[in-house]
Length: 469
Image (cartoon, rainbow, N blue to C red; front, side, top):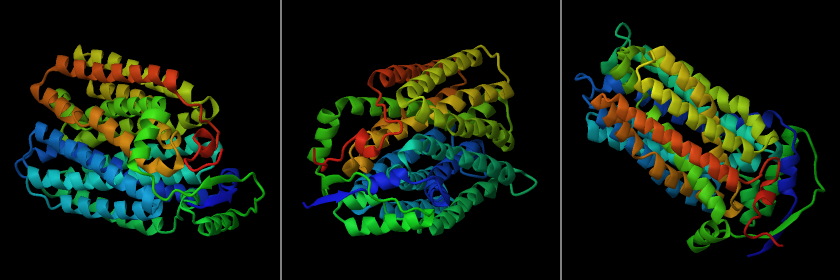
């Protein structure tokens, strides 16, 4: 392929923060908001879906429906991740949002566990595709000096969606308003309306200039950057140019070689971080509402009130701690947040097993734990999105998300659902302790194998495959 020379990456990294960056962050960051909305709606509606006048599901069936969503997200990430590297970030993040929109509206019309699980699978398929395309686009458009700050804050918007989902459940399940029989269907329909609004905004986000360069489309990349510079109000050329060969398609053989040979230690790091946080989050959060109703006797229409402080802690964690990942450094902060999360979960789980906590105390403990754990989980996505070559960034994110979720997230919801259904506090303590221990192991791996990527351009953290040496 042809050789291209350009200073575009340096110009993107030198841009001052501007309203244009805010528009990109809002348009793309809402992916996590949608994911949070979906997960929380199902978690909050879980007890209501067990009623005979809704779907009449068991706790285990709700857990399996959650696993169907996760399975769809895994396959969606793999399918769309490859396309995002081949066809571009923008095309894919428009299509994946459309898939989500259709599937979540279809969920409102499901009538049994099979149709509900199929719709949840397809909804996850769209959301999973979002992860690869959106993470790639954000990292390639945001200046290096604030990449972690922005990335973690965007991942934290998952919990704005969680708060919205909790609020919807409170209103829609209230017997004096709509009630469970129809409220759960309306909740999914409203998610589709939000998706339409986001689709209209997202159309104006440009294609990644870095991706255009790797495909030899230099003039298009230059035009995009010039337009961004006009909107930001700067004219910033003359930086050191990089030279690379345009590699429009990277063969699977090369992808596997890079992951298993050239950057083996980075692959171990990414898989460990993704798997441990997936088990930690999915196993606990998908069954949070069931735990409140089963062990603490909280009425199903009041579950949303307990999710609010939990969501606030999860949102504020990445927002407040994110800057430290750019200032203190990736390695130190990842190891610190993972280890603190694991230790706090084990301690809280022990207190739960001894029946020392009320529903309010349990919620406050988890809010503190996930203030830290949310930043840790977000840093896992940041890590796998910045430590592999540009030409295979999206598929790398997809592979680690898929592998980590399959290893750490798929089995969690049904396992915890079964534990809750059995009423065993000791069994739940063992499961929670396992999740905490896995986070501590991940902290040790991060300390040993972590990459010091703070404030460094993506091309310096990991040179593109086509870059000349």
